[in-house]
Length: 458
Ligand code: UDX
Image 1 (spheres, protein in one colour):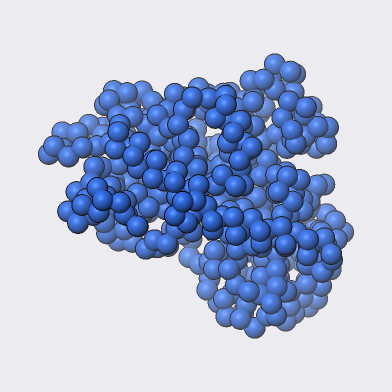
Image 2 (cartoon, protein in one colour):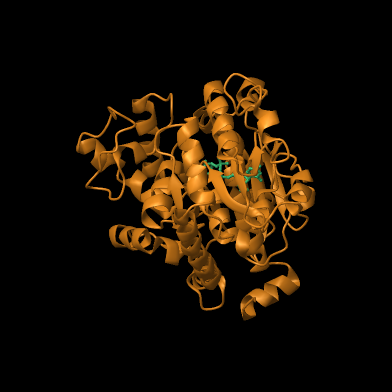
């Protein structure tokens, strides 16, 4: 519920303005719009700055203002999304349009107070531009606190000789960064190690003197990592998540059309019988991996709902599933191109989630108490998967690539064996703690109040 000052703004609709600028990717736009909605409910006026590519739909957010920034992305760059390509191009192309847009807003400003810019840390030109306009900058972190701690350790890992990584599949522990092993260090497949290291180092340099960090995470889950971060750094930290679980007016943030037929299909399945499989919005696997995945799922004999996003197999817009797969899984499975994931996870028929361990997917699974089978692909996902399987013990990890026998065993372990039951009990407890954190007096609730006070003090 709004506190006294906030209630006045809501009535007048004239709270100070926040400028939010998300990277135009699904996993970034969703939490940024959730944060915008939350802070709007706390009384702030909201402007979303967005690129032309993957622009949000203003009609879904009639209370926000929208300002478009020209991104200069080519059709080739936007038709097959590659994180590094997009990040590099946006950094090269957006500085001038962003500066011009801000200059225009400042000129037009009729005395309204603009408090700060909130972005997700990817835009390296943000500190200079923000400083030019004397605007504080806050970061909404899209990753877990644990993975942020891993990124912050990159210079130390370099010093200790871990880079360039010799064997990316090595299970050798890193004593400086428990419980991570060499294979859990965030990387991007196919990316030159030097370019990747440089990108992480540059990102760290430009975000470390931000006016604060907002985290889509909660204290109960990441207490140790938060304590470590607070011990080592002075910047204000606001863990206010899970953002999607506040009771707020919600509009779809999905960039792709969600196939809702899967909800009817789930209605016909037994409780906790279905494994839901989705690798998020960016992962692209090889065709051979798709075949192994298909046979692993089929041989497990479990009902499944499988999201295969168009373009998610390298070099193909769409790949037919192997011959014999449909026959073997008839009446037992459904394949869709994009699902209403949060609703799917909340459905009583879903018993496990095979995920790429993106942070949004991980939080969404936790909040519905659904055990995870983790197959991390890039970046922070590797750290998330390690924490899910080894620290929080609310899932298991596929350790050795996509191979049909290992997939079959892992699915059965989660869906029908005792280990699955234990994991389910643990994740149910974490789910409850997430709910407690959001209630009045809970850590995320309190952090949100501190964030509002802090924004007002800027
Ligand atoms: C990326 C990184 O992988 C992630 O680790 C980082 O923290 C954010 O950017 P992405 O690959 O998009 O994210 O994964 P994730 O963070 O899990 O976000 C995917 C979003 O798409 C989730 O909110 C999920 O609900 C949604 N989704 C996914 C759907 O709505 N339908 C689907 O079928 C699949």
